Length: 321
Image (cartoon, rainbow, N blue to C red; front, side, top):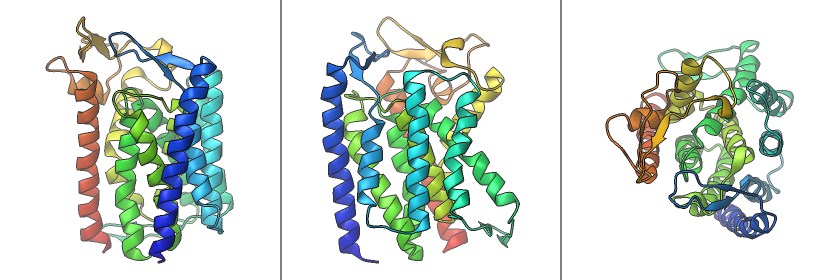
Protein backbone atom coordinates (compact mmCIF):
# COMPACT_ATOMS: atom_id res chain seq x y z
CA UNK A 1 0.00 0.00 0.00
CA UNK A 2 1.50 3.32 -1.12
CA UNK A 3 1.09 5.76 1.76
CA UNK A 4 2.22 8.75 -0.31
CA UNK A 5 -0.56 8.11 -2.83
CA UNK A 6 -3.06 7.74 -0.01
CA UNK A 7 -1.94 11.05 1.52
CA UNK A 8 -2.19 12.79 -1.85
CA UNK A 9 -5.65 11.33 -2.41
CA UNK A 10 -6.83 12.48 1.03
CA UNK A 11 -5.56 16.04 0.54
CA UNK A 12 -6.97 16.25 -3.00
CA UNK A 13 -10.42 15.03 -1.98
CA UNK A 14 -10.50 17.28 1.09
CA UNK A 15 -9.40 20.46 -0.70
CA UNK A 16 -11.57 19.95 -3.79
CA UNK A 17 -14.64 19.33 -1.64
CA UNK A 18 -13.96 22.34 0.58
CA UNK A 19 -13.37 24.71 -2.36
CA UNK A 20 -16.52 23.55 -4.19
CA UNK A 21 -18.55 23.78 -0.98
CA UNK A 22 -17.48 27.39 -0.43
CA UNK A 23 -18.24 28.14 -4.08
CA UNK A 24 -21.69 26.54 -3.83
CA UNK A 25 -22.52 28.62 -0.77
CA UNK A 26 -22.04 31.76 -2.86
CA UNK A 27 -23.73 30.52 -6.04
CA UNK A 28 -26.75 28.96 -4.35
CA UNK A 29 -27.36 32.13 -2.34
CA UNK A 30 -27.23 34.25 -5.50
CA UNK A 31 -29.71 31.93 -7.20
CA UNK A 32 -31.88 32.04 -4.07
CA UNK A 33 -31.62 28.27 -3.71
CA UNK A 34 -31.93 28.42 0.06
CA UNK A 35 -34.14 26.98 2.76
CA UNK A 36 -34.85 28.30 6.27
CA UNK A 37 -32.97 26.65 9.13
CA UNK A 38 -36.13 25.78 11.04
CA UNK A 39 -34.52 25.20 14.45
CA UNK A 40 -32.88 28.64 14.72
CA UNK A 41 -34.49 31.69 16.28
CA UNK A 42 -34.19 33.94 13.23
CA UNK A 43 -34.61 31.04 10.74
CA UNK A 44 -31.60 32.03 8.59
CA UNK A 45 -31.67 31.01 4.93
CA UNK A 46 -29.11 28.28 4.24
CA UNK A 47 -27.91 27.29 0.73
CA UNK A 48 -29.10 23.87 -0.46
CA UNK A 49 -28.25 21.39 -2.00
CA UNK A 50 -24.51 21.08 -1.44
CA UNK A 51 -24.05 17.35 -1.99
CA UNK A 52 -22.42 18.01 -5.37
CA UNK A 53 -19.24 19.03 -3.54
CA UNK A 54 -18.96 15.62 -1.84
CA UNK A 55 -19.55 13.85 -5.15
CA UNK A 56 -16.94 15.80 -7.11
CA UNK A 57 -14.35 15.74 -4.33
CA UNK A 58 -14.66 11.97 -4.01
CA UNK A 59 -14.67 11.25 -7.74
CA UNK A 60 -11.71 13.47 -8.64
CA UNK A 61 -9.59 11.76 -6.01
CA UNK A 62 -10.40 8.39 -7.61
CA UNK A 63 -9.56 9.24 -11.22
CA UNK A 64 -6.44 7.09 -11.18
CA UNK A 65 -8.01 4.09 -9.43
CA UNK A 66 -9.02 1.99 -12.41
CA UNK A 67 -10.86 -1.26 -11.68
CA UNK A 68 -14.42 -2.58 -11.51
CA UNK A 69 -14.77 -1.82 -7.78
CA UNK A 70 -13.84 1.84 -8.21
CA UNK A 71 -16.12 2.17 -11.25
CA UNK A 72 -19.02 0.59 -9.37
CA UNK A 73 -18.42 2.96 -6.44
CA UNK A 74 -18.33 6.02 -8.71
CA UNK A 75 -21.46 5.00 -10.65
CA UNK A 76 -23.45 4.08 -7.53
CA UNK A 77 -22.66 7.41 -5.85
CA UNK A 78 -23.51 9.31 -9.03
CA UNK A 79 -26.85 7.54 -9.50
CA UNK A 80 -27.85 8.07 -5.86
CA UNK A 81 -26.86 11.73 -6.15
CA UNK A 82 -28.96 12.24 -9.30
CA UNK A 83 -32.01 10.58 -7.74
CA UNK A 84 -31.64 12.84 -4.70
CA UNK A 85 -31.12 15.90 -6.89
CA UNK A 86 -34.40 15.27 -8.70
CA UNK A 87 -36.03 14.89 -5.28
CA UNK A 88 -34.48 18.22 -4.21
CA UNK A 89 -36.11 19.90 -7.21
CA UNK A 90 -39.34 17.93 -7.52
CA UNK A 91 -40.35 15.93 -4.46
CA UNK A 92 -41.03 12.25 -5.01
CA UNK A 93 -43.95 10.48 -3.38
CA UNK A 94 -43.39 8.27 -0.34
CA UNK A 95 -42.41 4.94 -1.99
CA UNK A 96 -40.89 6.35 -5.19
CA UNK A 97 -37.51 7.34 -3.76
CA UNK A 98 -36.65 3.97 -2.17
CA UNK A 99 -37.70 2.17 -5.34
CA UNK A 100 -35.52 4.42 -7.49
CA UNK A 101 -32.62 3.88 -5.08
CA UNK A 102 -32.45 0.30 -6.33
CA UNK A 103 -30.91 1.75 -9.50
CA UNK A 104 -27.82 2.74 -7.50
CA UNK A 105 -27.24 -0.94 -6.69
CA UNK A 106 -27.05 -2.01 -10.33
CA UNK A 107 -23.40 -0.99 -10.97
CA UNK A 108 -22.26 -3.09 -8.00
CA UNK A 109 -24.18 -6.10 -9.32
CA UNK A 110 -23.41 -5.80 -13.04
CA UNK A 111 -19.71 -5.08 -12.45
CA UNK A 112 -19.65 -7.88 -9.86
CA UNK A 113 -18.00 -5.60 -7.31
CA UNK A 114 -18.88 -7.92 -4.46
CA UNK A 115 -18.09 -11.32 -2.98
CA UNK A 116 -20.94 -13.80 -2.61
CA UNK A 117 -19.15 -15.48 0.32
CA UNK A 118 -19.47 -13.01 3.23
CA UNK A 119 -17.90 -13.82 6.58
CA UNK A 120 -20.33 -14.24 9.48
CA UNK A 121 -19.19 -14.39 13.12
CA UNK A 122 -19.50 -17.89 14.65
CA UNK A 123 -20.31 -19.30 11.20
CA UNK A 124 -17.41 -18.41 8.91
CA UNK A 125 -17.63 -17.81 5.17
CA UNK A 126 -21.10 -18.47 3.79
CA UNK A 127 -21.74 -18.97 0.08
CA UNK A 128 -24.95 -17.21 -1.01
CA UNK A 129 -24.47 -16.67 -4.74
CA UNK A 130 -28.15 -16.20 -5.55
CA UNK A 131 -29.19 -14.40 -2.36
CA UNK A 132 -26.32 -11.90 -2.16
CA UNK A 133 -27.30 -9.78 -5.21
CA UNK A 134 -30.81 -9.54 -3.77
CA UNK A 135 -29.34 -8.30 -0.48
CA UNK A 136 -27.36 -5.70 -2.45
CA UNK A 137 -30.58 -4.54 -4.13
CA UNK A 138 -32.22 -4.22 -0.71
CA UNK A 139 -29.23 -2.51 0.90
CA UNK A 140 -29.27 0.60 -1.25
CA UNK A 141 -32.89 1.66 -0.53
CA UNK A 142 -32.32 0.91 3.16
CA UNK A 143 -29.18 3.00 3.56
CA UNK A 144 -29.99 5.87 1.18
CA UNK A 145 -33.27 6.40 2.99
CA UNK A 146 -31.68 5.89 6.42
CA UNK A 147 -29.24 8.74 5.80
CA UNK A 148 -32.02 10.82 4.27
CA UNK A 149 -34.25 10.33 7.31
CA UNK A 150 -31.56 11.26 9.84
CA UNK A 151 -30.71 14.49 8.00
CA UNK A 152 -32.74 16.71 10.33
CA UNK A 153 -30.19 18.65 12.38
CA UNK A 154 -27.07 20.60 11.48
CA UNK A 155 -24.13 18.35 10.67
CA UNK A 156 -25.74 15.06 11.72
CA UNK A 157 -25.91 13.12 8.45
CA UNK A 158 -22.37 14.10 7.44
CA UNK A 159 -20.96 13.44 10.89
CA UNK A 160 -22.71 10.09 11.32
CA UNK A 161 -21.62 8.96 7.85
CA UNK A 162 -17.99 9.96 8.46
CA UNK A 163 -17.96 8.14 11.81
CA UNK A 164 -19.65 5.04 10.38
CA UNK A 165 -17.15 4.67 7.53
CA UNK A 166 -14.11 4.56 9.85
CA UNK A 167 -14.41 0.91 11.02
CA UNK A 168 -14.49 -0.66 7.58
CA UNK A 169 -11.89 1.79 6.28
CA UNK A 170 -9.65 0.58 9.12
CA UNK A 171 -10.50 -3.00 8.18
CA UNK A 172 -9.30 -2.32 4.61
CA UNK A 173 -5.96 -1.06 5.91
CA UNK A 174 -5.50 -4.02 8.25
CA UNK A 175 -6.38 -6.55 5.55
CA UNK A 176 -4.34 -4.79 2.87
CA UNK A 177 -7.38 -4.16 0.68
CA UNK A 178 -5.78 -1.44 -1.45
CA UNK A 179 -8.84 -0.61 -3.57
CA UNK A 180 -11.13 -0.46 -0.54
CA UNK A 181 -8.66 1.83 1.24
CA UNK A 182 -8.49 4.21 -1.73
CA UNK A 183 -12.28 4.34 -2.04
CA UNK A 184 -12.76 4.86 1.69
CA UNK A 185 -10.08 7.55 2.02
CA UNK A 186 -11.48 9.59 -0.88
CA UNK A 187 -14.99 9.41 0.59
CA UNK A 188 -13.92 10.07 4.20
CA UNK A 189 -11.79 13.09 3.29
CA UNK A 190 -14.65 14.58 1.30
CA UNK A 191 -17.07 14.05 4.19
CA UNK A 192 -14.70 15.71 6.67
CA UNK A 193 -14.30 18.75 4.40
CA UNK A 194 -18.05 19.11 3.92
CA UNK A 195 -18.65 18.66 7.65
CA UNK A 196 -16.63 21.81 8.34
CA UNK A 197 -19.41 23.81 6.65
CA UNK A 198 -22.36 21.57 7.54
CA UNK A 199 -21.69 21.30 11.28
CA UNK A 200 -23.64 23.46 13.73
CA UNK A 201 -24.38 26.21 12.80
CA UNK A 202 -24.68 25.06 9.19
CA UNK A 203 -23.46 27.26 6.36
CA UNK A 204 -24.79 24.80 3.76
CA UNK A 205 -27.12 21.80 3.67
CA UNK A 206 -26.38 18.63 1.65
CA UNK A 207 -29.96 18.23 0.45
CA UNK A 208 -31.51 14.89 -0.47
CA UNK A 209 -28.87 14.55 -3.19
CA UNK A 210 -26.13 14.72 -0.57
CA UNK A 211 -27.78 12.51 2.03
CA UNK A 212 -28.66 9.80 -0.52
CA UNK A 213 -25.11 9.92 -1.89
CA UNK A 214 -23.80 9.37 1.64
CA UNK A 215 -26.05 6.36 2.15
CA UNK A 216 -24.91 4.88 -1.15
CA UNK A 217 -21.30 5.45 -0.13
CA UNK A 218 -21.77 3.57 3.13
CA UNK A 219 -23.38 0.49 1.60
CA UNK A 220 -21.00 0.34 -1.38
CA UNK A 221 -17.95 0.49 0.89
CA UNK A 222 -19.41 -2.20 3.15
CA UNK A 223 -19.83 -4.47 0.14
CA UNK A 224 -16.52 -3.78 -1.60
CA UNK A 225 -14.64 -4.13 1.70
CA UNK A 226 -16.36 -7.44 2.50
CA UNK A 227 -17.15 -5.93 5.89
CA UNK A 228 -20.91 -6.35 5.95
CA UNK A 229 -21.31 -7.28 9.62
CA UNK A 230 -18.79 -4.63 10.69
CA UNK A 231 -20.72 -2.05 8.69
CA UNK A 232 -24.11 -3.06 10.05
CA UNK A 233 -22.87 -2.72 13.65
CA UNK A 234 -21.29 0.67 12.86
CA UNK A 235 -24.52 1.99 11.35
CA UNK A 236 -26.98 0.80 14.01
CA UNK A 237 -28.17 4.37 14.80
CA UNK A 238 -29.08 4.85 11.13
CA UNK A 239 -30.84 1.49 10.99
CA UNK A 240 -32.75 1.98 14.24
CA UNK A 241 -33.81 5.53 13.35
CA UNK A 242 -35.16 4.38 9.98
CA UNK A 243 -36.87 1.35 11.51
CA UNK A 244 -38.50 3.43 14.26
CA UNK A 245 -39.84 5.94 11.75
CA UNK A 246 -41.19 3.43 9.23
CA UNK A 247 -42.76 1.17 11.85
CA UNK A 248 -44.43 4.09 13.64
CA UNK A 249 -45.91 5.70 10.51
CA UNK A 250 -46.72 2.50 8.64
CA UNK A 251 -44.39 2.75 5.65
CA UNK A 252 -42.86 5.36 3.36
CA UNK A 253 -44.62 8.73 3.44
CA UNK A 254 -43.72 12.26 2.44
CA UNK A 255 -42.35 14.49 5.22
CA UNK A 256 -45.17 17.00 4.67
CA UNK A 257 -47.72 14.30 5.59
CA UNK A 258 -46.18 13.64 9.00
CA UNK A 259 -46.77 15.17 12.41
CA UNK A 260 -43.56 16.73 13.72
CA UNK A 261 -41.82 14.39 16.22
CA UNK A 262 -40.45 17.36 18.19
CA UNK A 263 -42.11 20.49 19.49
CA UNK A 264 -40.05 23.67 19.22
CA UNK A 265 -40.45 25.79 22.36
CA UNK A 266 -40.33 29.58 22.59
CA UNK A 267 -36.64 29.47 23.50
CA UNK A 268 -36.00 27.19 20.47
CA UNK A 269 -35.16 24.20 22.56
CA UNK A 270 -37.05 21.06 21.56
CA UNK A 271 -38.95 18.37 23.40
CA UNK A 272 -40.62 15.17 22.23
CA UNK A 273 -44.13 15.48 20.82
CA UNK A 274 -46.46 13.42 23.02
CA UNK A 275 -48.94 12.92 20.16
CA UNK A 276 -49.05 9.12 19.59
CA UNK A 277 -49.43 9.74 15.85
CA UNK A 278 -46.09 11.53 15.57
CA UNK A 279 -43.25 9.36 14.21
CA UNK A 280 -40.80 7.76 16.60
CA UNK A 281 -37.25 8.95 15.88
CA UNK A 282 -33.93 8.89 17.70
CA UNK A 283 -34.29 12.63 18.24
CA UNK A 284 -37.73 12.20 19.80
CA UNK A 285 -36.40 9.51 22.15
CA UNK A 286 -33.38 11.62 23.09
CA UNK A 287 -35.55 14.66 23.89
CA UNK A 288 -38.28 12.67 25.65
CA UNK A 289 -37.26 13.64 29.20
CA UNK A 290 -36.40 17.32 28.96
CA UNK A 291 -36.12 20.15 26.43
CA UNK A 292 -32.84 20.14 24.54
CA UNK A 293 -31.16 22.45 22.06
CA UNK A 294 -30.54 21.42 18.47
CA UNK A 295 -26.82 21.17 19.14
CA UNK A 296 -27.39 18.91 22.16
CA UNK A 297 -29.61 16.54 20.19
CA UNK A 298 -27.20 16.49 17.24
CA UNK A 299 -24.27 15.70 19.54
CA UNK A 300 -26.21 12.89 21.24
CA UNK A 301 -27.01 11.28 17.88
CA UNK A 302 -23.37 11.46 16.82
CA UNK A 303 -22.31 10.06 20.21
CA UNK A 304 -24.53 7.05 19.52
CA UNK A 305 -22.73 6.67 16.21
CA UNK A 306 -19.36 6.78 17.98
CA UNK A 307 -20.52 4.05 20.38
CA UNK A 308 -21.76 1.88 17.50
CA UNK A 309 -18.49 2.35 15.65
CA UNK A 310 -16.59 1.38 18.81
CA UNK A 311 -18.68 -1.80 19.01
CA UNK A 312 -17.91 -2.34 15.34
CA UNK A 313 -14.17 -2.09 16.05
CA UNK A 314 -14.56 -4.66 18.83
CA UNK A 315 -16.46 -6.96 16.46
CA UNK A 316 -13.69 -6.56 13.91
CA UNK A 317 -10.89 -7.32 16.36
CA UNK A 318 -12.65 -10.35 17.88
CA UNK A 319 -14.06 -12.04 14.80
CA UNK A 320 -12.21 -10.74 11.74
CA UNK A 321 -8.56 -10.16 12.65
